[in-house]
Amino acid sequence: MNKRLPCSGIGGQAVLEGIMMRNENKYSVAVRTEGEINCQVGQRKDISEKTVFARIPFVRGIFKLFDSMILGIRALTYSSQFLEEEEVEPDKFESWLNRKFGERAEKIIIGFTIAISVILAIALFMILPLFIADIMERHISWVTKQRVPIIEGVLKVIIFVVYLMLTALLKDIKRTYMYHGAEHKCINCIETGKELNVDNVRSSSRFHKRCGTSFLFVIILISIIIFLLVRPENIFLRYAIRVLLVPVIAGLSYEFIRLAGTKDNLFVNILSKPGLLMQRITTREPSDDMIEVAIEATEAVFDWEAYLEDNGIEVRPKVKPTPRSQSYVRPEPHDLPKRDNNTGSGFNWKF
Image: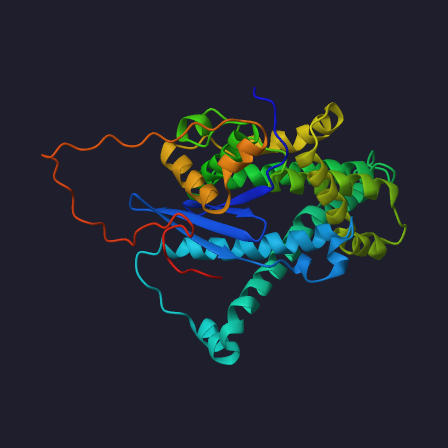
């Protein structure tokens, strides 16, 4: 395997039939529709850039998490528009929001979606394991109070793994996991010093230490360690503290993932193994057309040629296509706008 280059700083997320890539404040969403790739580019300023508190280590993680969720939901919403067979009229609630809040309606919907997602995640991965462990303590003789935190930790891992495996059974999620693999392969291709093309991306690894799956699993593991040490006697306090310490756990997890993404040593690699194992569920080997989408999204926001050259790797000049003979008949112009190398497909798309 090629020696790994310094962190490129690029990251991404799989969406419906496509990929979102981000580099600093620039992001792109590439979606394949009927054989074509629609790639849109936008600019975004994170919450973490608007306040000094969001730059403090072990605090910035919670802001980064919300930034990622906001951009991820917007990218998913955009990609879903291409899958609708016919234009759907907004329902009464959506119409009311548009009348009442105007341009702010989208932000309110995204905020509501994030709130529901966080509540469900806390309930499923923090509260439910403790609830089951408490019931086991009451009804199973060998489950003592001292063993409850251990059983709770085991249940967290089981619930998380089962959740991922069940989602992988869904047809649409399977394809999303394939696009997730294509996203990782593109980043690994660049960061191992290879030119970005379909053949090189295909041969690259689909596992990456800077991954949302690894981040979530690290949250689970860190929460297990913390709640093994923090064990209040009061039953209500035991449940409350699992909610109150979520920002602390997220902050610690972010710092580890950040370290894992920038360091390549034995200690970090060993600690990263559990998260990489989880990616065997949430990533799949992509098809070549999915890799093409990932490349399109990557090139829209990241100059990989300059990155390789800055790290001492010579990039071969692109081969010009062979001129057509005079008997060649040029096909009719395509219906879609001509692609612009700087802005993607030419659509003026902003979130």
